[in-house]
Amino acid sequence: MARVSRRAARKRALDVLYEADLKERAIPVVLAGHLAGDDPPPDFTLEILRGVHAHRDEIDQLIETNARDWKLARMPVVDRNLLRMAIYEIRHADDVPTAVAIDEAVELAKELSTDDSGRFINGLLARVAAPPTPPACVD
Image 1 (cartoon, rainbow, N blue to C red):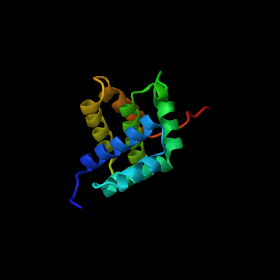
Image 2: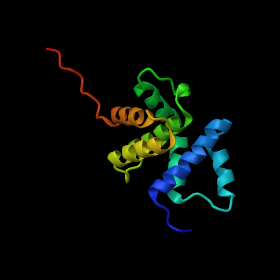
Image 3: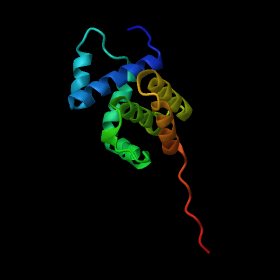
């Protein structure tokens, strides 16, 4: 298989997540169809898809917690799945710098979603990536 850029692999992962979301099917079910096709997804795409699937509850909880005035179900499908991918990378893909995960998600949002999506995704991911604030000391 020819070497594919990570950006192209992310785009491919987004396609599968988008399809699974729209069809209301589990990621592994949709992925199986893609694996059986003439152009199976590259390894990095598989890593993202398997990671998002394995950590979906945690990821969706982080989105809900950090999405100010937005419910997960109301978000555009592209945005919701870009957030899932980026949060998986930020939290679980040690070989992907946080800044790269955020930048890639923002760029894909600008290309594929609404005019406000890049800013929305950037803000939410920045909150997810920020180190936790230590509790205030009370004397």
